Image (tube, rainbow, N blue to C red; front, side):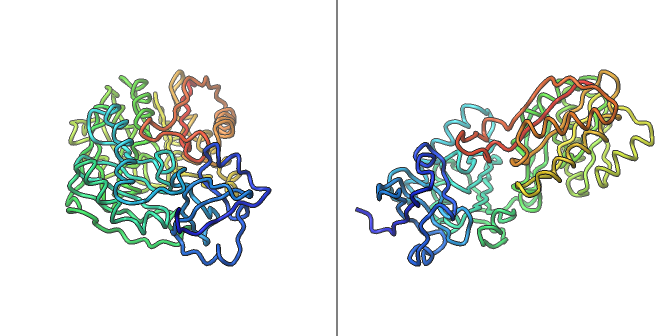
Length: 396
């Protein structure tokens, strides 16, 4: 028997959802007596239903609205290096089957059985985002297991992101193993080269989740004039150039991101067909309209305008505005790609907002493709938040 503390669901809590795979318990679902409130954030506990039947091993953070996260359905599991190795081996097996080069998301949090943990792999370097207290506290066995299973030489901890703030964690980036790269790491995807800044870039340095959508956009772009708005390091534009686009413009508010995009274009030999524009995306869209610019393919991949439910209505208006401003720049018979990484804006809401924006611009659109995150970002069916990314492609 375990000597861990016990936490118990209230009689009205949805124990069935937890039994069927939902990985979280919210604060209002748990009996929060003094003993529970005194559990240290990140500590392990055995979760029981209201009838005192064990449900599994959880990690507890009394300071978070998500008070429990399920780690293992076996309440007597031991969370040590060997436990992490088992999780990582399963995750690696799938990615190794999917990708012929070691550039991918290796661990997608709850979907890979590691709540709050994101790990992206860049060849010989892994970048970990431990976005939950338990993972931060067990970073040593986690790091050792990751090195043993993958064989990577360098492991970095990226402590940026809103989730860590919500968990009460620090924002200090550190090197856990080996060395931090002294220069951006070149990553080949969809026949394009992307320069990933693993120490100073956004998130872990590159957005692997859009890989399949970059590929679809590239299929539309042979011989096309392409506009890539909210481009980061040139995700859609560099893939389009690799597939024969006649020209591409990348628009972003970050000079550093655009410089990496330009380096990627240069590395692949596309510099003569590539240009960048730094500025607020809405202002640039307005300026291009005033110039009478026209493109065969326009793709907009903005940040999360609706990161949570309170921001949903405002976020949907922002997505509608993007569509309304981008649609007039698409030549007759051209293509408009619109993306959302807001889990709160589920697919039908995002699709409706995008269609309204296109209509308000006086255009008519055929929806030809709906894309999601790639298979290295598996969706946990019980957890809607794990399926956050949507990409809609319209022919106008």
